[in-house]
Length: 276
Length: 288
Image (cartoon, rainbow over all chains, first blue to last red; front, side):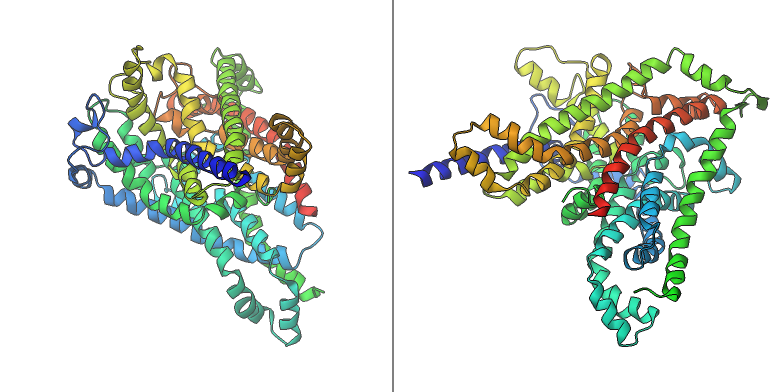
């Protein structure tokens, strides 16, 4: 009897959870479906869910009309560049904080995190001005550097959290065997740290890919990434849902897939280890 | 254990990150402070000299200031209420025994990966458009008049869009916290005849306290500066001008740098008040 009730409850739970999950996911699903419709089908009344003639015309149109490739390329360079640069700077810092902690390590970590709280709009004009001064307005290099700086605290924190979980005994053993600092880092730490570095890389790539304040405000024709490409669809009203959907799908698909792989790290990474 | 040698090496390794962040913080901040005390109009005469606290007074006394603060608070408060409320319910649901929990997790987290410009445009056009949006069809199906979301219910629309983006984050953090709850405690309470509401109020909710605080603080930091969602939907019209958006307009649209910078200083102060609380919580965790 008890088993039957539990089973019944499990069925109800499953139905409810799948239903709600479907509702939450629905806007994305609807966008993907619409991207395969014709414009007329996209605005059909009543709406068509699955019974339409699937077409790739919208994707072709988006690829042809706008220079989608360049926006995509800019996104890849900006998100990838800022992430890799950030990792290169953060790995030594996080390593030293995790394995050679000093009296002020904790304060430095917290201070780094506090720079993340600086509202972007508060320093919009200075950054804008500096970009003009250095001739890097609407350039990828400016965004690589800015997004790197924005995400650097998160990168350091995530790496620090991962590095701290590496047992110190192994390092001591390596030291006693006469490994130099360089050898220790290269042959002992790095192999053990690679999973942590990989998920940090992934999460920060996602964050940089979706960043939509600096990318919208500091780019124009040349360096605009996908966030700006999609924003350009905000002005014309009306009959372009299918193309908007195709463009949206192309902009979010790579990140959605990457995100699904790194969802667990994303959660712990974003709370800086405050929730376990 | 660490030798003097490795200590100085450690400092050297930390240096690039520290120096860069110090520069990133101090240089723009100093410039913002500098401009905030000047009358500075790049398109209309450039630097027109020092004006003391004029910009600060003018920013606060402008007719757009208090409405923008109210708008900011409504958006932040509304999104927090929705995401934390629904997040708790969803986390409890997802923690129940079921089939395909991993799959539901994947469905639920998806909105978090959608870039803000995409989610705002998809919602604005394909759901909230008064003629062709799905909501309009739904309203008509029930015989109601479709809502002019972006003009008549602009603030609610933005709250809905942003809540959709942040619900995954709240849910998954709360789910992580709920999973560490002692199952036996709940079972014991159930056997003692405590009803579900009491079990929730006296066991689950207190256990979630810390996670809820973290969700609220982290989301507040991000919500205070939401930009793209407003930029591509209403462009600040129909009462959706937040403090961030107001400053953006002063700086880039009306090119009044002094005034915008003073506003920026207010935004920085506001964010820092929130940040102090967040630091305390994260800092405590570091000792453990």
